[in-house]
Each structure stands twice: as C-alpha cells, then as structure tokens.
Length: 165
Image: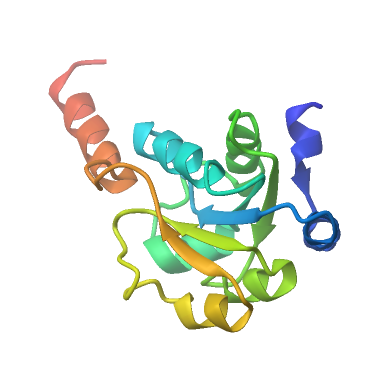
C-alpha cells in the first residue's frame, strides 16, 4: 500500500475502527501535530503500536496547529505531515482532524487504547474521561520527553544564524 493510501478520511477511519472492533482487534489511537519529525515521534508511535493490533494516528490540521502552536506553524502543511507519518512502519492509517483536541475523533473511532506521550501522565491527559466513558484506556508511551519540535526549530535557527550562507 502506498503512503498516500494510508491517509484516509474520518468516515473511512470510523469504518476501519468498527471493523477492528467487530474482529476483536485492539485499535490504538495516537495523535499530534508531527510538524517536524524527530526520534521522539518515532519512539512514541512505535510504543503506541505495541499497545494493540492496529494504529491510527490523528494529525492536527493546519488550522488547529496554528491555534495550538502560534505564528509560523506548521512548518509543513497537513498533507505533507500526514504522508510522512503514514510512511512510518508502525502506522497503519492516518486521519487529519481539525478540532483543537482529539475528543471528537475519539468519539468517532472509539479506540481500545488512546496513546499519549510521556509529556502527559494518566491524570493530565485532557481526554482521559472521554476515553474511559467510551470503554477505552489511556496509555502513556514513548521515551522520556527530551525531544521537542520547538527546541529543534530553535536549534536549527541558532545554527543558521551562526553560519554564513
């Protein structure tokens, strides 16, 4: 399957989620902006996939990234970010969502597991009550939060300012 075929509509994602439940397969939902891929993202998605049989990754739309991260973001448009994430081995499907958080996508997909990175705890996941109400569980996965897109951007800018082009 090609990368672009792994980027699906929300309607198709809900169909896949329903089929997974019907076949007793554990669906995992991970989400994020994935604006500039780094090793922390890879480790997060690999660990998320290990929590179930199928991994769908929700990617924030360009509008929601701007609202969350501010001016100058995203660096890459939503289609480019979706295709990059779709190209990763642990990822089965990618869906773009426009809301500021993943609550609506959780309602649509009803995953068995909602995977969040280690910058959260089980008590700080904003959607934790929604996940529980839908019969799912929250999993905190990945390596310690020592990587961030914001820090990576700052590092790149610092390096670029220090060298002559």
